[in-house]
Length: 268
Image (cartoon, rainbow, N blue to C red):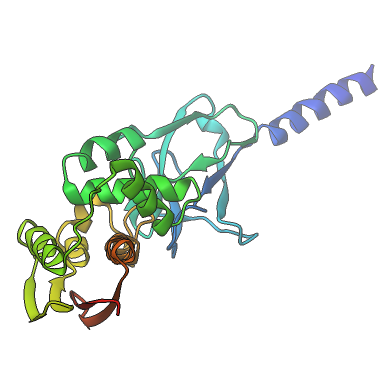
């Protein structure tokens, strides 16, 4: 009888020990081009809404984890929490994540880190010319497509033919495009029958500075995994396709971070 009582008592204390509210959080940041610090904040001690509990990528695979032990007195309560990357909150248009403390150890399913939901991004970006391009490249990257592949698909889809066949037509198209966009710039340096040379604004790079914060741009100038160079590929590919179609040669030089000097010649 004594042994039975001891077993019951021992089982009781073992149950208390095993009832610790240990929660293992894990978040996937493999789609993020830039990651410096990852943390979690929440509404139950020892988490707080004011300070990060730092998460770590132990395997260097883009998956950040952290195990937090909550007091047994909190068993049955609902923990609300969110992840942060480089001091940027996730799910800015969505409610906090929630989990019930059950008194037992839990390893939560892998969470996907996003600043905004896809629906929010689409609705917000679809109202902006710049936002549409960011969203297109963001979505294509998630499918494993390169920026150039994305642009070629756009050219094929929209079927912008017939392509102008004169150098003067190209000057007109570039001028129209630059004048139609904020921070655009256009200047003709040379206009001959067989050669044109002009300066065009790389306004899409300036748009990152002007509008990037509203789309969640990080400290490295990346918006939802899309960089200035990704959007620049659109214009380089467009010029390349335009010139190849007409058997023209071309050269693009950087006049500055925000302007190109483009020379196009009729092949002899």
